[in-house]
Image (tube, rainbow, N blue to C red; front, side):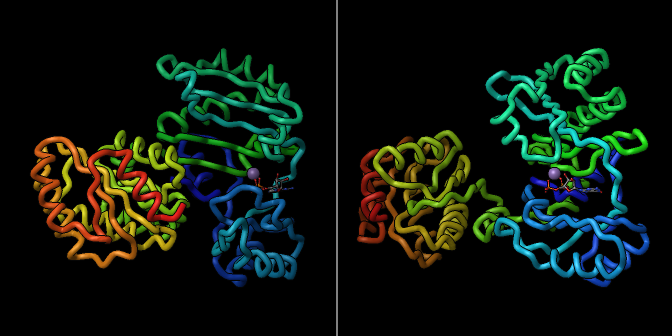
Length: 376
Ligand code: GDP
Ligand code: MN
C-alpha cells in the first residue's frame, strides 16, 4: 500500500524523522486559509500516488493569498499521470540550502536491506543512477544485525552528507523495519539555511502482509488508488492483481497461478490478471472470482486452472458449474482440472461442455484454447 506524501510524513514523524509539516486541503478556500496560517512563502503540493509532481506543475511556492488561491485552483482537479488531484498539502515553504536523496528498500537478490544516499536530490534517482552512478552511495544492511550508528556515520560521510543526517538516516531505517515498509524514500531530504536536515517529501510503501499488526493502517485505505477490478477483488477477499492482457486467469495456489501466467505467455497470449483463489474452489469462491474477472472489459477468454488437492475434483467441477449459473459471463471459460478425483470432475464438466465452457486435459492444451479464443 502506497501512502500519500502527507501520510508518509506523518508516518516518518512517528519514528522521529524531522519533516516539514502542513495542512491538507480539498478546496481552494481551505488551501488559501492554510497558506495564510502557515505564512509566506508557502508551498502548495498535489497529493497523489505518483512522483514527478514538481515537473508536472503539482508543486508551487506562493508569496501571498492571491497566489495561493491561484496555485490551489490550478492544482486541485489537475491530472498527474492519470491521477486526479483531490487534495493538496499546504506548508510554510522551507528555505533550502541543499537537496539530498535517501531511501531504504529490500534487495531481494542479495537478501539484504539496501540503503541509498546521494547529494543529488530533488531529481529522479533513476536519472542519477544513469548519468552519474558514482553519485549514489549504496549500503547493504543485514536485517539480522540492523544498522549500527558507526556504519551509518561512515555511510553518510562517504556520501558527502552532513553529520546532521546521521540521526535522520538511523530513524529512517527504524521506520523502514519497525514500520513494516517495503520502501521508504525521501527526495529531497534537505539541509535548510539554518542547518537542519529534514524530509521535504515522503514516499512510503507499506508491506500489506504486515497489515494484521497495524490496525492504524486502516485510515490509509480510504485514499488508496485502486482500479475497479482490484477494489472488487479486495472486497471479496481475493488475491488479485490486474494486468492488461485479454486472458482472464483463475487458479488455486499462488505458484499455480504464476505458472498459468507463464504458460499463457508461452503460447503467445497475454494474461489479464493474476488471481489465486486459494486452496478450496467452492461455488461461492469461484463465483466471486468469475465476477471480478467479468468486470474486466479486456477479457476475451477465461482460463480456470485448478489442481484438486484436499478439495476433490467433483467438488471443483460442481463449483464451477454452479458459479457459471450465477454469473452471466462476457467471455468463454476454458478449464483444466487435475489432481484428486480429476476424472469424476471432468465427467461432470463434460456434461456441461459448450462453446461457453470447455474442458481440456492439460494445462498447455487449455492455455492454447484460451489464447485462441482470446484472439491473441
Ligand atoms: P515530487 O516532484 O513529486 O517529487 O515533489 P517534491 O515534494 O519532491 O517537490 C519537488 C520540488 O519542489 C523539490 O525538489 C523542491 O525543489 C521543491 N519544493 C518542495 N517543497 C519546497 C519548499 O518547501 N521550499 C522550496 N524552496 N522548494 C520546495
Ligand atoms: Mn520528491
